[in-house]
Length: 306
Length: 236
Image 1 (tube, rainbow over the protein chains, first blue to last red):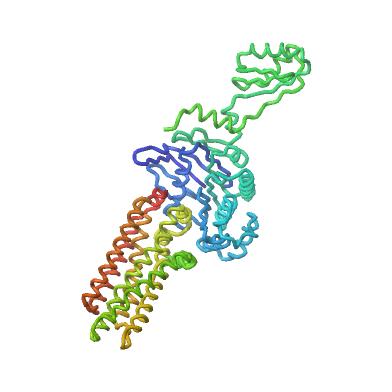
Image 2: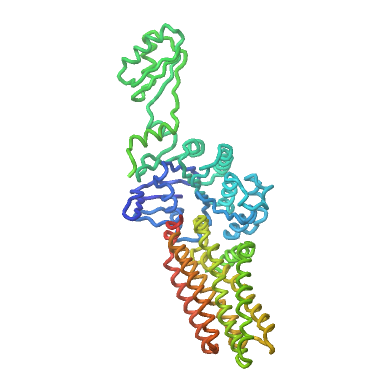
């Protein structure tokens, strides 16, 4: 549905994107991650046809959105700017955009959308009086007024207070259930982790990682296990055994619990070693690494930006 | 290029201008001010020259006020759209850049032209108050008011819109100041021309109409050189 091939963009001789490539399939919620200034918005602008690539291409439905006006009816966008007119009411804004997209049953559609984003009681108020969170919600309603197949969201909850962030995130989550393809530009790892099925991490002008969230966690994070022992007398012995294993990189004791970081995937071997040495193990569980840990690992190891 | 989309944009811009009280008041105030200042001049000339003097007033001031109002309104429609960043969202709708530009040009031209018509009406009323004979616009001036003036307003709006979209914020501010100075001098020049006793002929009106149509065609052609990239990269 969205295909980016060898995309390069330079501004005044400075490379902003360098040969990036990824693909977003139909119905996928794709998270495009990266620190501020990494080139996420530039990538999105190229996909949307607002900027021309220096080389390579970015296609949606196999076409360049910039040169195919009609195709843009199938795409919804919410950029950092909500695209709302402060002098118009909430209803007026949605009415204007619904006319631009040629929607016939405008009144019904707008009413339903205002209900969806919880702004029905403010429909006649000028957007200039709205809080940032309300504007964002209305911006989201504006972005989906024409039932787009693909939705591009650029930092949808950026700059919002926690309550508004949660409201916007819930809306995105609801939209994701409607089997729309969503391209989410964000530096909010928590948001991406909760919503996205696949992600790409952009850093230093290139894609540093591109996979499903779970796969990335497994690929980029070292396995960490938490082992709970039954007998306190075993803790010291178990710790010595674990330290002696060459595939154990770290081992920390906390009461009956020992947290073990492995250099490689050897979860069954580690348990065998303990049990064979007479250690009574009550529980052993793998600790999930957050996307934030993975992200920071990638960014740290890939060096600075260009 | 579908006209429907153009009129959707035009309607929205017109409503926006009319509902912005400060802008409308400013436009109407200028129309009243210049009419009140200029029209009484008919009492200072000889009886035989009153009709020509009155038509000259209409010729210059209706055109100038129309262009000046277009300048006032264009800032909100083009400059603010870019400054506030909404243009980026608009460029992602199914409308082409030329449709957006055309819609905005129509949306500014109509209210600016209404102010120009108000100026014509005010000058006619005030001039008649100071004249012993009934003063009505000549056929040439009538054609000027109904064809040349709206065409030149559209030229001015089109050119300003083109400039606002093409240039960065600093260049746009310089452009705005420059245009204000040009209009100021043009209004002063108009006073000199009026007092010089020129007679506006059919040939002059016809010539101006041709110039306006050619300029409109030229600006419309120039919009091919506007690009979304240029607009997006000059958003502050």
